[in-house]
Length: 386
Image (cartoon, rainbow, N blue to C red):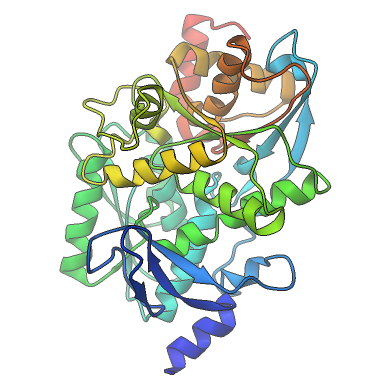
């Protein structure tokens, strides 16, 4: 075992290797983004410890900025619906260092990148992942190149530039930025920290989200957990975290916008595979991912939603705006549109009779409101009620 491999084992716990979800091929723990045999999604294999997962199992001490451990708090049940009599809780991921849950993936992926001797990093991003990558790269003292769609909100772009990263704005949808990041990694020899399923070490750390929710609820399984979803690594993390700690999984909701809903469309159509979205158009920029070039990621997320007995739901932008305002004015939680999509989806599910009157519902709020001030300006201009 090389020194780097030995250090990885110590820093990351019992990592045994990478396993392809499609063909079951196994690889040693190395820098690999897709299965070399079939191009399938790779996931980290670990020996389950005789204890809870610890953040140090995933993130090196010199990399962490205190990400994770975000609060789970109860908010008025009327935020879901005036007739709802259950418990409504929010997992507030806006408390992470750069303001979104993406810090968790980036910190873990960067820890592995450093162990592999990375000289720099690249990330495709609709904004939040880029801000996280720029933030953590600045702290680690390594260069970062961030590829974002031209439509990325200015607040997110400003944050990326504030951390000193090189920003490349790419025309068209997120899939173009994804492809450009791949090209730049090849050109510079940098490590790809794009936060789809591409970097298995980043995705692996998201199991902590499920563990944190389960522990905060005192070991009680909630009825539903709603998750803003693009390709779906956070769905995977919550699913895996509950499987690790509770050995069962609550019903998961993949919350999407009607303007970009490839997973929800496949769910509604009873399909097993997800097809790319044609032209994304939504206020929820963080989940405006058409999955063009990697629809198998959406298919994997769809399978997890079905295994949990959950739902994939698409909601219109006006539902998202209304949920965003309600969270701010009735729960003191300032979030971007993407973060509010989880509540908007649950409101729809309750109105359709799928969420029951006494259920316990957890909404994950994925990104801070400072990420997209323009969305809030739009809300105020149109007088959206709470």
